Length: 447
Image (cartoon, helix red, strand yellow):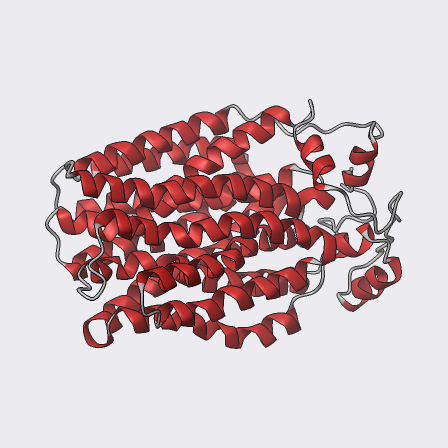
């Protein structure tokens, strides 16, 4: 049973939930554009004579932002549980929007990579913070659906990148497509105005008066926060990691990390290389960008559907089914088909990679205790960023070796199957009617 500090199904105002979802959706939309823009301009970068990049170097450019995202998810996700979730979300957004302008006008690929790395620090921090806020301010039976709604912004951001590329690449070139990613900086005042601070964060710091005042402002009825045993104490990361790998959470943590690792390989490998792979399959630039468009749009719609199904039938069951369906869609792309049939398979690939991974991230945020949500999600995403970094590099390696383009689909399909197996091995969430045994458990056991 949730403690009085938790925002529960019967007392969370729908307006508050809607504002939190909208603010996080805007931030994720901006991030989705910045993540997707490299895949959208990659064919143009491959033909950019001033830099003369090899396929392996192109894959490396795709990895710069992902290395930054690894550290961003780790540190910003953890800091959000220390100095405030709202504050860190705004800071992360400032970082990745401003650095897009620097990447757009970088004189060399090295400078371009540096700005992409710096931007990745912010991009990596957005997801764990937005996940924690969305889960906190959602009714328990609607958490997966609300998370899917919020995270649809990610896929729609990639859709926007593909559309902007289709419009601007032929007339202005790749630099202006990248530069558009800096425009969401104007959204910061709106997000700062409508997004409330985390009540869980305020309570964990012993700031009960502020929590009560905020709850009153948000019209949360009967809100009676309970002071933590050691208010304001910063939980050392070693203790948090020890709790995550304790006997209670060890198996869950391992298989969450493996499955999310595989999911990130799929998301970033396909997002970066899909247009170029389809060009090798014989499609022109416009058609290859259409594949990226359908891949992302299907994942946005799929995220909503999977979120609803996950709330109704359970996250694990839905994730296993759709990771396998996604793997099948990816594999079938290797065979010659009509444009329509291949677009259908690409849609399955998008749902079975991006949509499933977003539901999986929400599953992680919902699985661990409330005070640990940002940290647990951030650490899981940081490990998964190794997979995200590997995806574009592996795609570049396959292109550099001259292996048939069909091998890309075989490889990514296998990764999808491994993700499904790992999810199937995650144990059910343990609900115990006992007091926490350890100091760390007492500090973390908010819900």
